Amino acid sequence: MTPSHGTLAHGTLAHRLIADHLVDGVMEPGREIGLRIDQTLTQDATGTLVMQELEALGLVRVRTEVSVQYVDHNLLQADERNAEDHAFLRSSCRRYGIGYSKPGNGVSHPTHMQRFGIPGRTLAGSDSHTCAAGSLGMLALGTGGLEVALAMAGRPLHVTMPEIWGIRLTGRLPAWVSAKDVVLELLRRHGVKGAVNRILEYHGPGLAHLTAMDRHVIANMGAELGATTSVFPADEAVRDFLRAEDREADFRELAAEPDAVYDLTEEVRLDTLGPLIARPTSPGNVVPVSEVAGLPIGQAVIGSSANPGLRDFAVAAAIVAGRQTDPAVSFDVNPTSREILADLTRAGATFELIAAGARIHQAGCLGCIGMGQAPAPGRNSLRTFPRNFPGRSGTEQDAVWLCSPETAAVSALTGTITDPRVWAAEEAVPYPDLHLPERASVNRAMLEPPLPPEEAALVELERGPNISGLPDFDPLPDELTGPVLLTCGDNVSTDEISPAGAKALRTARTSRGSPSSPSPGSTPAIRGAPPIWPPTAVPARTSSSQGTTTARVPPASTPPSPPATSGCAPSSPSPTPASTGRT
Image 1 (tube, helix red, strand yellow):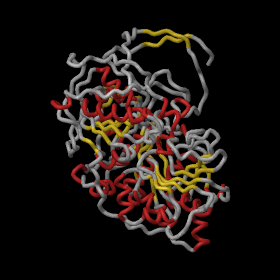
Image 2 (cartoon, rainbow, N blue to C red; image 1 turned 90 degrees about the vertical axis):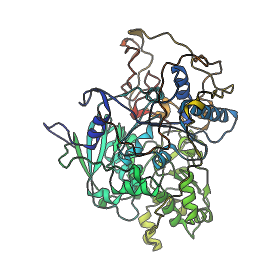
Image 3 (cartoon, rainbow, N blue to C red; image 1 turned 90 degrees about the horizontal axis):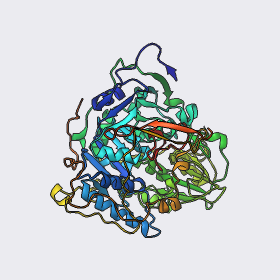
Image 4 (tube, rainbow, N blue to C red; image 1 turned 30 degrees about the horizontal axis):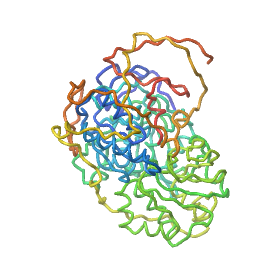
């Protein structure tokens, strides 16, 4: 990584996206800026509170182009509470003009990319891996639920203007090495804090060999580097993706200027990379697979928003085709969308996985956030996931490793952590030559569009005994004084701020009680126009120890900006983009 000396960054794609949506502030690193948000996404682990916040705001209808609520986290429904959440979320979507993705339709990030991602748009999501949409040339920011609720109500999203880190990709990935190894290489170099307050902008000739879904893998795990977000150009690879999804009309070519200057620069030679793996218990603990080869494993899992593409499942299927996984290994496959499961089945790959011993699960996050698939204590679990924080899997004494689909599939066959290149040489197996369909099995049936405004106004929220309303609070004073209750050091994970796992996600619900929101028929505080649905090619708009502390509180008309963080749980209920979310 090389810093630029004496020249302000300019001409980057990130600067263009920010400038097109800037409504407040100056684009200087470290200064606060306000951004207009075009799209939002919420998921069911965070969406319930977002909907309660919309109710408390008195919102009539969202003021974004597109807002979508995904049900992809709480899918086990081990008791009545998850089902109550789903019913409340659906009724809230019908009430406020939000799209609703039914349980089992898919993980929010790849599903949103398939159905709604548009180059040049901004996206705010109540999930830290919202940044994956940067793969399409979007400015996509994971943030807290309150910030997303305010964005849905038409308020700007306030963030700290980041530095722009230009990462030049050259060469082409060799056999048995894939996009997961690219982002693991960056984590190997820089760790989990290397990109804090920075946008990673990828460019260079190596992009020509990475599909849009390959880029999704890299952009998704930019969150693990601490990045504000990641940005890729919208080029022919993005056009191909949108064409396959029957949305080529939404394509808009976007790239940095030829003479763009970055705050920081770095080069990754793709042809020099090998298979990498993140050891327990941090995504930044990266070593070559060859360094840990031979360790026995008890589980290998393919899926998650960090390896969500059809290619990621198809390559695993091709590797295990005609073979049987080791009897000591649970080989789990979590399709990331119903569309991908349909395409995988249409190609015959689902049957190859089943014959090899794979356990096929529903489309969703599942084991990525500890919703099932908990490994045995002390048994190594290889996963194509983005995170391996301690206990995230649902097992307190877990040993989760992060790797590519190639490494996971080969290791499932051998029963030990295996460098896929070594296995291929010993077994005389060529690297799979995949022939994926040019057109996806587009499935819109499980996406419920918003109701027309006149129908939505008649919808009552469906509130089970587990769902309450937010209490009324007095307005905040200009200054607030109180004791500092906790200080802590670095490397506090998101799971220590807001735990993952089936038990935590089932019980982390609002308390029972009666709603305190505006009564039906009362004058709402915020009104908005209906969103565009389905989205069309609309031109983008331009434009320590305990002590006492005193904080200045912004006026009520100013949305709260994300708080600074130094590895400790923030006092605000809404975490920063670099430290939010359970997935």
